[in-house]
Length: 129
Image (cartoon, rainbow, N blue to C red; front, side, top):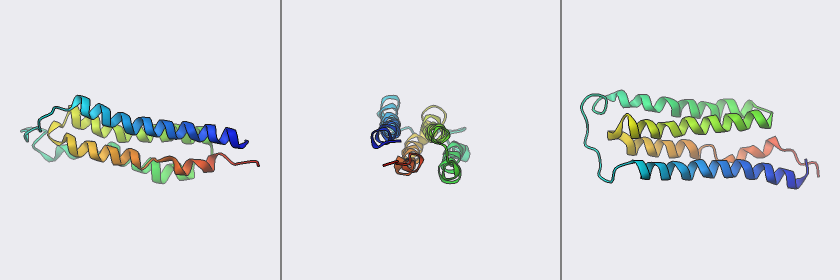
């Protein structure tokens, strides 16, 4: 693979990552209400909202346990997207199921997506020159 092809492949990874990162911010600010939500009874007032962290934990496992062992770029890209989507789902759970904790879950989601910053992706594209 020549240098131009490597740059093109890396651009895809960076654009995807930036789009997910910017997209979650736009979605959150579009769908969240301007006033803070008071603590709710039922699911919002209990510790059940910690269940929204499960997709984030799966995302972290994909990033730090699975992706380092993958050697094929196509497989890594799929795992990259799935991991980011899992981190992103934490925000959606906060917006729709646990609105009292939407801001906390949004911040965790942003951090979950940030961990996928594609500095590691260069190892999938060896440079021939």
